[in-house]
Length: 158
Image (cartoon, rainbow, N blue to C red; front, side, top):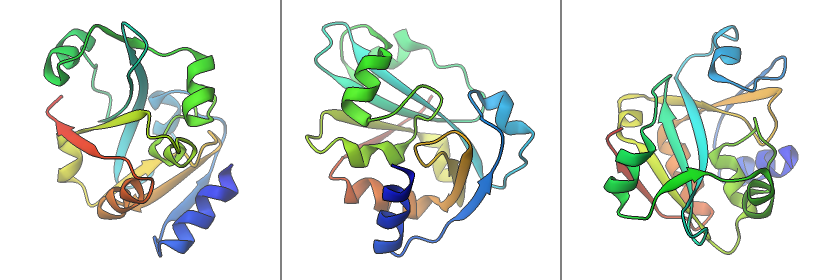
């Protein structure tokens, strides 16, 4: 799957810097890597009924208040989606969640929510569907990538 991400980035003429590292499961694990750009936390959530799924990209170590986020997006109670749902919708394993997994959601079942603060950064860091590598891309190219996957995205102040 990692190679699929590189192929799409190449096809879209999106430049990136690649950093290989020990497995990073948390934001704390990435702090030792020392990358430039926004360090982004990626959450895969579902609503109470389980009929809506969200990829939420948050800058830094922010705590996400799921109740507040639920109110802002106007859905039913949000919670973390199961590993089974993560695999079904994004083809990912826990610890490797990122917008790059959207290429696996061909049905467009996942809504994308971006932290408004990401607009303050020229570059951002994400796993290419594997947690032993982090790619740094221009944030404008991130939007281009998401557009390529046929997903709409919205910005929310977290």
